[in-house]
Image 1 (cartoon, rainbow, N blue to C red):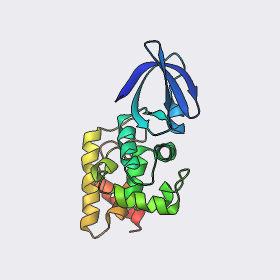
Image 2: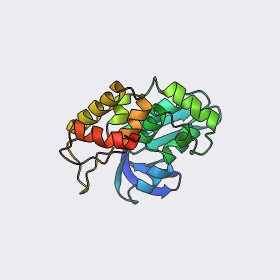
Image 3: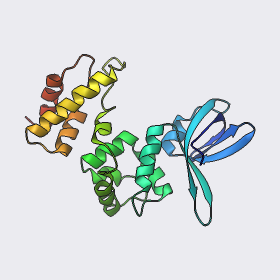
Image 4: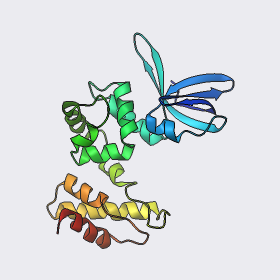
Length: 205
């Protein structure tokens, strides 16, 4: 099993990258998002990988973050979603976007990925709710402040989580709470009540 590759970028194409590791070139299939974010040829890179072995081919799929790889593994665990289709989803949505789509029952967002129809999107939501974590969906959302800096993530994560729990305690569903909190523009120093007030505005109160 190849967990990751650490080497130099030899070539970048729209759907793959060649990583030179000690003079050996590994061809790795990547999403269009990661291809766009790949450093230029000659730069060092670390690519987290998944080795797919089938009857007709052995392919190496790669990701620039461990988080993307973790979500990718969850996606391919769903029957009917193969390695290529899962890569297409992560080319359209970030790992965090996938989590939000799942927990907010947003099958339309998942269906935007190539090869994913409405039926498969609904199946993904049904099966991934037990495989992805709600806390991870909250973590990392709207963490950028207005001046482009990032607030202390551990504090903001706690405040966001408290806001979601407060909304669900008020009778809103997880999907409604997540959508509302996701629409809040987070700034440094915000408290739970500040997030809650803005979230309620998104719900329409």
